[in-house]
Image 1 (cartoon, rainbow, N blue to C red):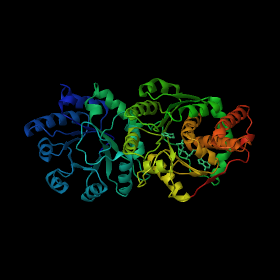
Image 2: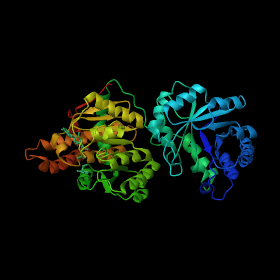
Image 3: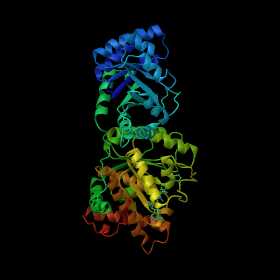
Image 4: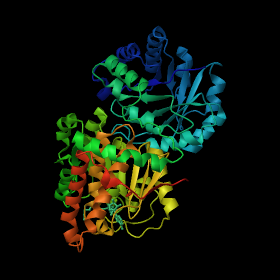
Length: 517
Ligand SMILES: Nc1ncnc2c1ncn2[C@@H]1O[C@H](COP(=O)(O)OP(=O)(O)OP(=O)(O)O)[C@@H](O)[C@H]1O
Ligand SMILES: Cc1ncsc1CCO
């Protein structure tokens, strides 16, 4: 039996959720608001109460042509003639339930691992409930928190099967679009999302459901536009760079930096030099107002404190809500347990248009790092150029965003194209904050040029690294100390040239190639 799983309501009868209200009234409001399937889930009530409630719910659901599924209790489903059941891994076996239920019944199975998903498919499940997506305070006994990356990996591995899928766990209005978007693998997407408290605990369950329907139907504002690689991709991109630098100077974007205290002053001066406007604010609540200027947000966790992550989360939510660019610079990502946890918490909390880091940091975000970072520096590389390019490409594909891995050669990818940039100067590696400034500059370019994020970031890096080369070539520059003021001057010189319509600073300077993998 085909079911529309797009907005799948799972009930919750706990007093904290119901807040004295009647379960059936909430479900009816949700049906009016557009939920497409209801699962009655009640782990506590006596059988008699469950049957009575399920019967009422079934009458309501039938009025709105919404199928009713019963969690775990095949006997309750049979007693009220519900459309089917949902079974967890500890519930009755699929094969037993199949024997007991009428022929057309829907049977869904919870799957937290690929093995569980494959077994449920082999048994003949009608759909999979994949989760837990995010851990929530109300459900702490979750075996696996998959996140969008784990969900995407399962979808990819089962893409040959036509089985339907919904994601479950911690999904709400603020993350639903991202969950659907980032979980999608090239060959298989979620068919829906299961929602509990975002509807059940809402003051107005009808409005909450309507809002979710709208969010599910519409693509997120941050969806990446596909830019398949052209025959001479690097050259084609380079032709556009000077115009994008001019545009950035003209737009005079604002970049909100939640940045470490070591580099804040240097980064603010870099941003002023390129003709943009910096604001440094570590206070998460300020983002509610700051995001309204439609600039970019940079999260740079260089000097993390016990309060940083919750502040970052508030700001990311505010900027994501307006679809404004958010950049994540996971400084020192692998250096300590606290930073490693911060990486997972932040990656689960919102969408980052760009993740920018040195090799050690990008490897930590990817999750494959067996390498202990000693500090905020990258440390000796163990990857060759192709492997670096592949890592940047794979992370961008997984997160469906843009990834920039900095170093003597920078690797930039949007999941389809990979561009290597050889510009820059070794002095950049000798001055703290030069990587952090790249994150902030990228924010300015992402704000000014939104249709091709890879091109926007590439334009920023080239302006930056060509300025560094120009500065290092001055005869009065003898080392990192004299390099810094000369560097700010050269950024300013390019910005001035660009605002005069003079692109000569760029002619023949870019050392860029596309890497084919
Ligand atoms: N040896 C080098 N040659 C050319 N450019 C370099 C070199 N080292 C670094 N860069 C450039 O310097 C910038 C910063 O990159 P790097 O990888 O040093 O960042 P980082 O380690 O995050 O820095 P920080 O944390 O100090 O801000 C990038 O634009 C990069 O291309
Ligand atoms: C040295 C240092 N320590 C924390 S952040 C930082 C600046 C480089 O990101």
